[in-house]
Amino acid sequence: MGHPDLTAIAALAERNLDAAVAQLCEYLAIPAISCEPTHYDDVRRLAERIRTDLESLGLDNSRVLELDGALPIVAAEWLHKPGSPTILIYGHLDLQPVKGEPWVTEPHVAVEKDGRLYARGSADDMGGWMTHVAALRAWFEVAGAPPCNIKVIIEGEEEIGSPNLEDYMDTYPEVFSSDVMVLTDCENPSIEVPGLTVSLRGLMECELICEALEADVHSGLWGNMVPDVSTALCKLIARLVDDDGRPTFCAAEVPEDWAKGSWDVPLTDPVIAEGAHLIGGVKPLPTHGRSPAEWMWRQPALTVVATTLPTASIKKNCLRQQASATLSVRLAPGQTIEEVLAAMREIVTRDPPGGVQVSLVAAGWSSEGWLYTPRGPAFEAADRAYEKVWGHKLLQVGVGGSIPFVALFGRRYGDLPLILNGVMDPKTTAHGPNESMDLSIFRKAVLTNVYLYDELARAL
Image (cartoon, rainbow, N blue to C red; front, side, top):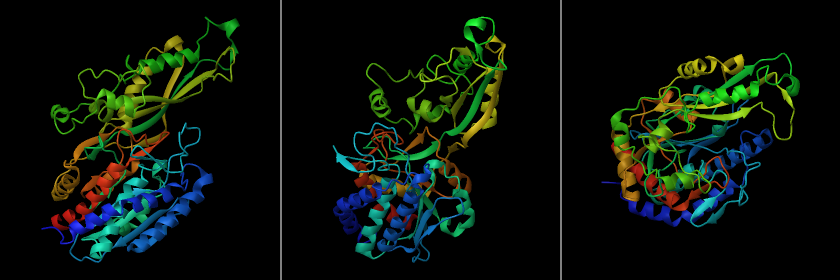
């Protein structure tokens, strides 16, 4: 039997949805962009606003925590149920930048259109953790308290890779101590099917450098007799990918039952084309016998993120001394930076074009991949909660991106149940222009959380 007031709590949460969205819109109006120092004060201003609202909600010890050189986290708790489990809810308040992006609406003014809420951060991730605020409000207003102990952590640095989160874990271990963690920054495969994220790709940046001359020289005088590092660089990059642009190095071994199991998500060509904003006439890449999910979540991928090649506005008719490219490699779960870098280095240093000198070094961002097997009563409880609202159990999915905080939580707290969910869907356009959240997902997530606390309280 569930809590005697459960139906009334869910009904109130549904009646209060407009108020929850209005509160979310107020948060979204604050440009808490963590990668831009000019917005650090906005991050802190939003953190203080959230702290005040969590206190008003009924949580105890609501505070803004800071470390030297770090942006803040907000922490609050309600720990008045001895013998009941403690659920940690994690989200982040900081935003991706918007400068130079072709937004149709103002990025920091939330606009509802065709059932979606458009604004930077609407789904990534303020909409995600706001579903918990809305669910907890209903519990407090109807039952006087949630059915289990609650901790809330809202981070201010996730969009810059959570560089200080582990320091916060070391400095404030009591803030993170819990029995189950609900991490609210992930995606659903569709607006009808809820997702439970169980894998992430890792990330490695490296620099590919070609050198041949002591200084730039006249291309008319010396062309055809000395190496051109620019064309050599392009040819070397081309060695690293096949005709589709996929890596020729370190293909990952994937168990045969993986693609035939619950990973068979609805990633059809139309879904991919719409979600990735393909232009007319361009189709998704051929799958060659692998599922789209495997290509996107369980195989490495390579992207050129920067080069020193001349731009259209800075032309110079010469053979250059040096040319380099920064390559971003998404690592399949389980792959290491060392093995992938070694495989790439063997390819680019073998018989280099024109005899140029080639080096490949790790530089820039890096993070671990993550692969998790959800087992036990917490996940059975989550499935029951989701079935009540969505009519569907959580579908195990992967994320092609690299989320450092997830790998960190997995490494530090991997012995705990980690429920990774959220309000994103294939149309969200997280990190891009016109980010949006489907309001039907928001509604279902709020109601699911109402039931999730009850299910976990009785299961653990």
